[in-house]
Image (cartoon, rainbow, N blue to C red; front, side, top):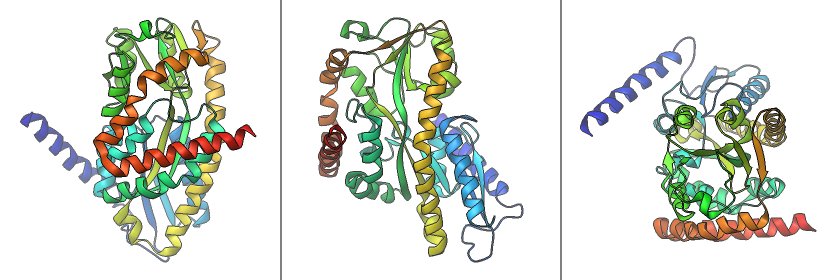
Length: 353
């Protein structure tokens, strides 16, 4: 344990040194204002061409255009700066200025963010979820405050589509899920939720999923369609389940000290660009999901859409995850959950009319 800590500590020192070096060639400090050039290091959790990467590239395009190239953006894809947890730590320390991070990786740092990891909480209508993620008082009030306490400024929560299951057998019954080695992210509430459904959750780094599927180290996994396709998981799995048990939600955030060092004009510009990219990203992720599904349908894999009854049996078993979220995180978590549940219910009624 001590040896691992020392290795990780040394890695973070080297990483910080490299980032400082990357930002020192012809670039000004993060306190630059007025006519001085600002270079933002923007990291995310996915590979080149995936949804988060397209989001970051769109942000880069717009912010550089609208600032007349006074604000420049360097993009770092998954693995470039270490693990996804390393990216979050770099954002907290200010080694990078911007990042896209998901509760699946940030939940242990910001426990209240695990609200996004609760299965069957959000609607099975993406338009409903889009409205909630854009307007939620729960997310942009008490939850955002928890990010700020950790030195982060959460600009926008946004979705990357529904999570789908892949497996070598149909995951449509509780019996099939029993003991199933499901790859999960490392966040405790995700692990608990799958245990409630009878599975054997197996946290696995994103870069190891394909090999673990090949070698039967895991039986299956959950991810958005575009990621299943770009990572080739469908090549080593026999079934793809449209379970709609969860949406993959991320947040675009900045280091708080960096953001506060900017002029009011630059703060407003960054917020406006994030808002514009956020609106654009909904259609983009939908197009990427459809392209992935079209391509997967050409492969030798069976696609199963779970019925409402099949989804309900898993939902019933996972409901205690909501109680666990509140028990572990207190009154703030209770406020966030109750407000968000009400907002989702009201949005569903609005779209039903």
